[in-house]
Length: 325
Ligand SMILES: Cc1cc2nc3c(=O)[nH]c(=O)nc-3n(C[C@H](O)[C@H](O)[C@H](O)COP(=O)(O)OP(=O)(O)OC[C@H]3O[C@@H](n4cnc5c(N)ncnc54)[C@H](O)[C@@H]3O)c2cc1C
Image (cartoon, rainbow, N blue to C red; front, side, top):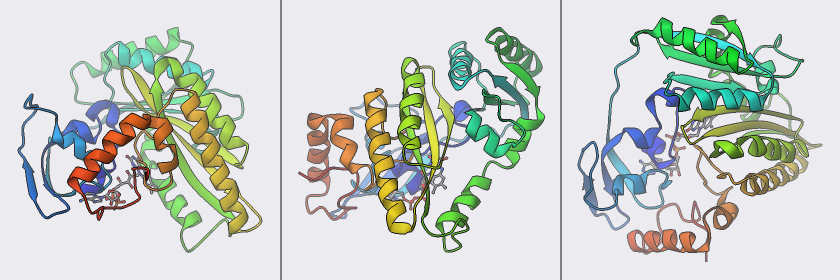
């Protein structure tokens, strides 16, 4: 749980349940000097800035989360699935925007671009388009009527209903990619040496999503053999996009060089499209070079000042998250 909070995580059903910051009620944090800070469990407080949120995304640099209390939600009775095919990723994103801004609250919303959909369902491509997966709470009031309305809305925006089966299949296999990632990057190296697989996770407000998709994908394609993208977390104001990419080289060193170029250019593309360089996976060491462009010098200086106050000897995860002076 400490890792989820410290890396500002977001799960598969974030459309319905929110992200980790929406669930944290209270926390016990041990500071670098051994002081124990107890932040009591309350639904909200106006007693100054929210120190719980200071810890969300702090990546272990400001303190160690020793305890946390999270808000629980009733378990859904089950999921009522539906799948749609839209003409393009952009028109699919426009449909997702309509869904969330009109107040529909599916638990799961995921828009796969053509490459991503084809990697899950080989029969999907070619032919362009994107696949939208919706998962509603089966026990929610009037859920069948809501599904009917969603189908109507999708039709109005040019998307074709494909029924529930593909979405259900995707849900049942949603973590297969993790095993594949382990096989490629772990000791097995099933694609051989000289192969690196990774993901870039970015976010932006709705009007910037089409350009964010185009620029980041284009930057990655300059170096990667495969690039897939999915819209993973919709908000009323915007969404997160996750790109997976595979870089191949003659050996690991060659692949690493392409990998670093891919990241550098994808990060630059994201920032020029007005996005944030990370939606849910955090900064770590890899994205530190982007932090000044991401936040601005003054904000980085403020973050450094907070770090200096809480961890003056710089013993907690030195070098992570915060660019050095
Ligand atoms: C294949 C794969 C898929 C992923 N998919 C998703 C996804 O769908 N959504 C998503 O949000 N993220 C995803 N991630 C990234 C994810 O956010 C983190 O890997 C994970 O949530 C972190 O939890 P962990 O327990 O593994 O923490 P770790 O990896 O152990 O740590 C993460 C960071 O938090 C710090 N930390 C750990 N524990 C504490 C603590 N108690 N107090 C303070 N700091 C601490 C660590 O120092 C480190 O900086 C994925 C990662 C992988 C490898």
